[in-house]
Structures are given as structure tokens and as C-alpha cells.
Image 1 (cartoon, helix red, strand yellow):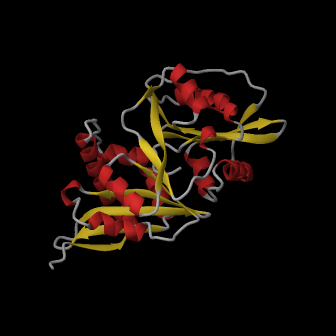
Image 2 (tube, helix red, strand yellow):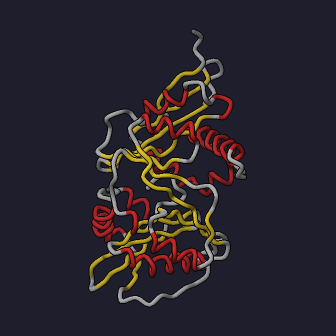
Image 3 (tube, one colour):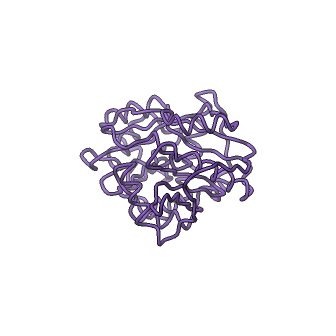
Length: 299
């Protein structure tokens, strides 16, 4: 049989090619599902650059498929491992090369069986990909919806807790909250987050009980020990987005997170038709008090 593609490990030199594959694959999915999603790779590189560089640097597995004849990259898949939470962060194949066995091969390399205490994927509704994820040992846990507002506005909410800026000195508190809410902590990912976005801590009687991250090119995650404590942090995120000049604020909310859903809908946020699912090898975490990292590549 003639070889049509080859797999190799990804390197930093593959970043731009992988971004082009991502744009092609997501644009094609949007067209097939009747939603519109068009993006300029150069603009997307500005908005996603820090996150993509972080995922590349901290990848547990990163595999690239290239055309056997030309050597052109035509697909890639990448995963990360954070203390036993093994997460598929990206899995994209160029539309011209889908449904040819390449995707299954990529997934087997980047998301190998038996890896991780919990295996998780934030998956689109692409049926072909979903069937592969079930075969990879994961099951749909719940949907995650993008809630968007075109004009974020300042908002003050009464609370018996104070909100203070998070710094590297607060990494232990951030990790403790993650361990309580997600059952895992991000490890050194918080080092990147506090530099990439504004980090904020909710403190009550001196103890950290929640956190939130907000930036110009994406917001989240948000986590609280008590679901109701999300409200002052959601108000803070919207207020800071307005202050930063963010034209459109999007938050990725698990749909059983009733506190966040009701607050944001009451504020005028609208649900996007393009949503995702958390797929995992078993139930974990308390997602009724959690808002996912946005854009939703990782939890």
C-alpha cells in the first residue's frame, strides 16, 4: 500500500503550520454544521499566540502528520498532563485529508490508552471526532456553552468577601482551590496564567475561597469553593473586561453551573450555537462552581 502520510513529533517550528490546520478544520466544521466561523490566521496568532506557545512548551505529547509526498503538515494532535489529569488539548486534521484513517492514528499517539488518572477532552459536536473519543475511553459528561456579550459593562455586587489581585505569591492558594474544585491542580500552569492574564483572588476572613482570570484575548478559568461566590467574581471579570477595552467578552460555562448561567443571562449574555462537551474517562470535579478557560482548549 502506498504511504500517504507520516507521523512525527511536533516542534516549535510547526506552530504556524498547526495554526493553519486548526483554522481550516474549524472553519470546515462550522460550514458543515451551519454556523459561520471565519478567521485570519495572522489575527488568530495574536489572540491565541501565548496559549498555543504554552501548550507547545508543556505538551505531554505532540504529533504532526505530514503528507508523504510533499512533507506538508496536514494534521496534528497535542495533549497535556497536569498531575494525572491527562487532557487532549488539540486534535485537528485538514479537511482535504479527513476520514482517511489519519485522525485515528494521530489520536492514538497523542492520547494513548492507559495514560492519566483521568482522561479528558473538551470536544466539539463533530460526530466523527466524538466517535473516536468514545473509543479512546471517554464519555460525554456535560455540555459547555459559550456565553457572549458585545458590550461588557462595569458592575458592582455586594459581597462579604474582598477581591484582591493575584500574584506569584498566591500560587499555593490558587492550586489549593483547583485541587478542591477540579480534584487536580494546574501545577506551574498558574505561573503562566498570572503573567498572561489578570488574576484575582476572592478572600473571606483572610482565606482564599475563589479565583478568576481575565484578559484582552480570553477570560477564565473561574473557580470558587461555594457556587454563590461566583457572582462577585463574574461581576469583576465583566468590569475588568470593560476597563481593558474588550469589545466582546465570552465565557465558557458548564451548562449545569446554574449560578453562572443565570447571572450571565440576566446580564444580557447570549448563548452561542457553537458549543462543546467535556468528555472524560470518569466523572470528576465540581463544575457547578467553575467556568472553563477561554477559548476552550483546556479546562
